[in-house]
Length: 461
Image (cartoon, rainbow, N blue to C red; front, side, top):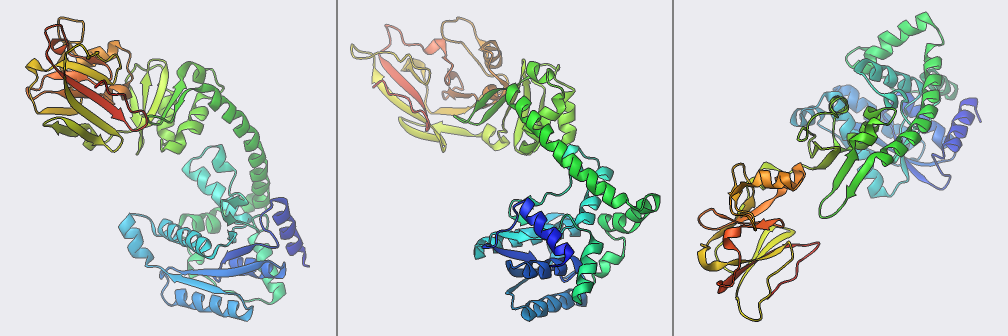
């Protein structure tokens, strides 16, 4: 066994990357790194199949590489899988750079093939120099601690067995095996950011210190270890500041502003909690600096809204404009579906000796004498007014809900039932309009019932 094979084998064992009984795909481009990985895994006795992506970006070179990989696999009796992509068209369609489009196509195909073949992982040839370049790219773009820890030995089903050895080590390994490989001409230019760093910045750093790459790689390892301690503490702080975490009737997260401000780094704790929800680092920085802002200040990611609500940061999935604009017409008695999990049931009854007014918040009874059909159900809007039950004068719905200390999300999602004259009959789950209360003089009674799939109400009739 060669020295580099022993080093890689120990690295595989240390990080529990591969199993002798496992089956793995090897991403084989035909370049030196992937060919070295391919040969090394075979020599170490692992069961592998090769997958090659032809991105059709380099004319004849692309097909040359494919043929080389196919012949290499045939020579070693390894199953060869290949796929062709129109990368330029995909990039244009999805508004991506060519580099990002190729990455997306590659890894999506890898995972689909792995799943179809029931393989245990996808081995890629990222090495120590790639890791150093990744750190330098992140530094140039701006990053946090996680961006300084580089690539991990394993990311889901993506495995990096040669991450601890250099490109030079892999070249020397191929030379010792007398193993040819192909050269991608784009690696000899400075067309892409990574290649600019590889061919321009790294050599400059090595002029300053010949051990620069090795030293940065060692720093990455130390930072990765430090990050483990950091993340352990961060998760504890994140757990401590959560005061609301609900799944039903809808997902909601509440973060105590007071507790958050007492942590060593409110911004990092926030990042831990809300970056997975799509909030950007710039937004998170702004939120952390705005914790003393007034109630109602809000930020939005692509799917979620975060709002300051008194002494809490509340986060829920954003409600769409179409949802807010939805209006449901109710022409007569019956069950009406407002959303897949929300129904409104309308029925009529008589105020006799068998009738008992509902005391449940989601089922109400009204005097039908002055109610005009068809009814309408919709979200509340600016300017909506009603006379809350027990009061004599009208009040803005927004003021009523504020007085009731309802959150921004509760107010935004608040439903109301109106009659044909656009008179608010019922602020659903909150209060009926006093003008339609059931009295001793009431004969015909209208029952309105709000039914949510998760917690249906009981009917009074």
